[in-house]
Length: 319
Ligand SMILES: NC(=O)c1ccc[n+]([C@@H]2O[C@H](COP(=O)([O-])OP(=O)(O)OC[C@H]3O[C@@H](n4cnc5c(N)ncnc54)[C@H](OP(=O)(O)O)[C@@H]3O)[C@@H](O)[C@H]2O)c1
Image (cartoon, rainbow, N blue to C red):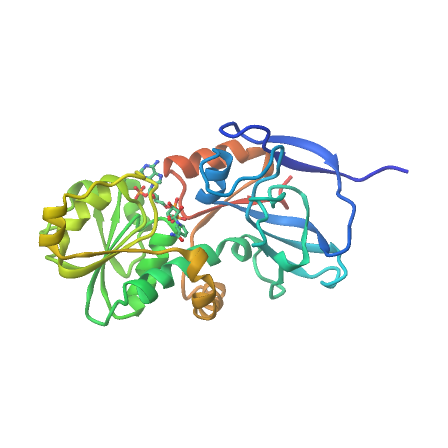
């Protein structure tokens, strides 16, 4: 009898790249669903796990990848042949995740997806959409007519935050770090380069900043916020550290508000679902780039350096 083989990206030590290995397909077992993967997200959280820099880490060797999408091969719970999204239940964190051609995950980490949905979209929409909604509505509570500045405005969360804020009736300015990204800021925002941030370039004080970048970009955006304005802090791709002069901070009277999708996920789920329908029709846009599993190193590098445009996804239908 031959055992079916399957490729997986296996992380052997933190700080190194996972290695593409061929191994037997896992045996189905009770309480678990075996999935033939079609797409898996490569996200900043996943790279933090690969680097050993996240608060929850797996025992190694392990297959990273916290979200994916595929077709059920065997399950006591989910019908064979259905398209499903994988996420949660610590997959890609404490147990093997989605960067593989097959994944065996707890039934509770599996959610049925509407047939016909693009697998790359199915596995990558919730983070940018849920986070953008949480930042704009739940945390910053953007009101019609307010002026909102979004940093990293061509990134996945940033571009979505631009669109969500504009729909909330805000006047939006989108900030990007490099000229090549200006064209990728959604049309509902005025696009500005981070190196040119000034009260003049953004058209005067803003009520709200949605910051997806951190570091020096956040530092430069803060003085543009009016007193009693709000800053929703989403990410730190440009720098994890940020120092505050308390005297200046109190004088400025601007609230710094963390956005955490892990704690806000349930709260925003219903609103995010509505936006998913609009992503399917093209009324909202989420750019993404697809890479074969053997191109993982390039995919990770593009995400790390900020070269990537939108979501980065491993397309497991390729190759
Ligand atoms: N708080 C939460 O719950 C939550 C949820 C989802 C995501 N996040 C975080 O939010 C951030 C944005 O996520 P995303 O999915 O939108 O990421 P993304 O699509 O990669 O966008 C991030 C932006 O950061 C800038 N950037 C990336 N790498 C950089 C580098 N090495 N140096 C300087 N700038 C860099 C780039 O903008 P420019 O080229 O314009 O500079 C890039 O477009 C990430 O830190 C992610 O971990 C947080």
